[in-house]
Image (tube, rainbow, N blue to C red; front, side, top):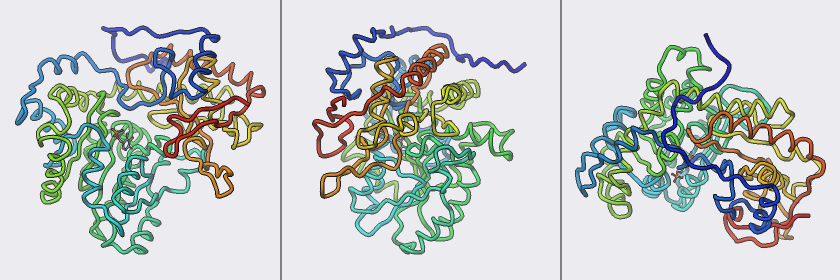
Length: 458
Ligand SMILES: *Cc1c(COP(=O)(O)O)cnc(C)c1O
């Protein structure tokens, strides 16, 4: 019965040509982009694995809903559809639509955050941390130790360290904790899942100390897949019911719908508490839009209302997770060092282990990003010392803990044969690994340098 081959659980109605350049053309494009793939044009890229955010393909049902949208300023039927869809999933009564995840973060954390407040998360995503710190508050990561060992196989490497969580609360005093934020799956920690037991344990601690408990639920459907297949208690539950149960523990959630919402733009904040929701609604109206559309058009809301249901379809989730795992395991078998086990939305390659001859100050991750583009037209992103490196007072690089390269897989965009092709490119990457040289930065901005820095090949 069960076949090995992974098939796309959809037929294709509209197609978009794939841009395929020659290796010589790509060499030139890369040179013109100063060896920073962020500076490439998308038309120069064949497989765009820069991010899974806002890059999903919508279904025909989503496109149909979009045509039927109601663009009324207040009380649009599209808002009713979106409200119902989010309410059915989360159970929360107060729902605030926003144009994307970080707008919801700015509203909530900007309201409850201030100097002296502390926020604790398994791992704060970068916009989450930025919004918390911008309010003057402090963001502390509290991941289980297993989560930061790249090659260790462990089923829920995204879990919060419960003992440490309680220690941090006692150390800073419960009344100073702004919120505990559980990020599912743990994006900055390699897309690793969080178990239901862990979500429950976080609830126990938050109840004990009366602390606000928020789910950062961008990838809650992907997380539900891992729970069903790795946590015995849930093997007979539906993915939707697993997600619902997780929402039941928390006091609210923030979602960037550009991930598991299966849309290109959108987000929301949902809460149980009326007083908190009222205060946030005031801020929403000042900066995003009226409370029945936030920053979204009726079209966006319709597409999201449908996407939030589609993402829990067993056929879709199986294909999604298996296809990501397949790519990771296939290149791992070829000898490419990757972060294990493979997470939900991306494959992370350990560039330091792949290119041990390139010292960290010559950016092995950037070297791999460039090789992947040159050899396969693959655009990936460096998550290492280019992104997180700092300089000491002598101007010497303080490197990042790890030198990773992320290939994030857009949802429903690439087929299994595309994935097989990408895996084949790694034969060339492996064969050529000893000839690859490092890079030096020749120009960089003060903040978020990875987006615009210029490089020179050494
Ligand atoms: C993407 C993301 C966000 C921010 O959402 P945007 O829609 O990009 O503003 C917040 N948290 C996590 C875990 C994310 O992956």
